[in-house]
Image (cartoon, rainbow, N blue to C red; front, top):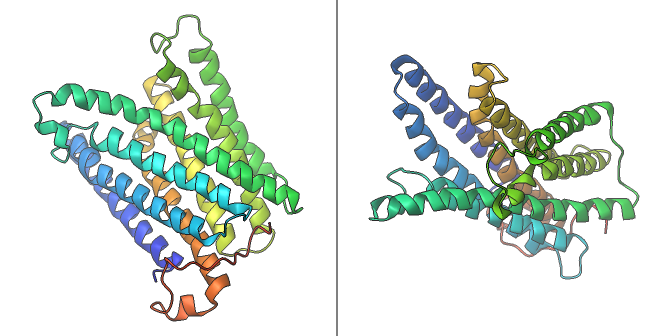
Length: 313
């Protein structure tokens, strides 16, 4: 069995390698002025990393869901997290793989491929708010369980600071774009309304993840706490990337910060992939004891143990 720490190491080293490739491609573009270097990075290692991490996160979330018995209060929450992972993976495949002009894209070789690629890129963007809705519903269920069992923690000063940054951006975005009579991003369509949901959902997700992280941390800095720290970091990185894209499009931040915002999505994806690994490891420890740590072959990650350490339900 692969332990959570090993998965974290694997994903961390993969993320570091990817970011080193990003720096190399950026330096080559800066030196030569040829955007091909940047396109090669985003269309090949960038896409493979995103899809690979999404697939890993979906698999681990599914295994977590299987550990909870039917009727368990946490089972619906993790089912919603599984649906989040499925939506994230689907959006990644459609938007990043089928929506790119790389040689990895099978649509690239079709006669009508150009139009199909454009459609795929536009369709892939719709899965972002859909996946956030699933995750928000799942985290809402966890918050309810924490409150019911009296372990829900409050917010601290730093939490209010993080939430304030994301909330101020969301309000400004809605005032400048959504509520504007001129709609600078073009005519209002159902798909555009759906994408507008992303920023408010990020605010909700960040609040939920912080509350759960604080609640789990109060019971000790263990695997469960690390799970929700990873989810919180992923949501925060996503918020930073979203803000960076908006600010870059309007030229309100220096070029260095613009460039950094291009790559912040990869740590976010990595955190989403690692988070369920900690939950799964904690549940297997509760079910099988030290065997799942000391004897890697004694317990498979597809086991069906039902015990779980947190939250009490």
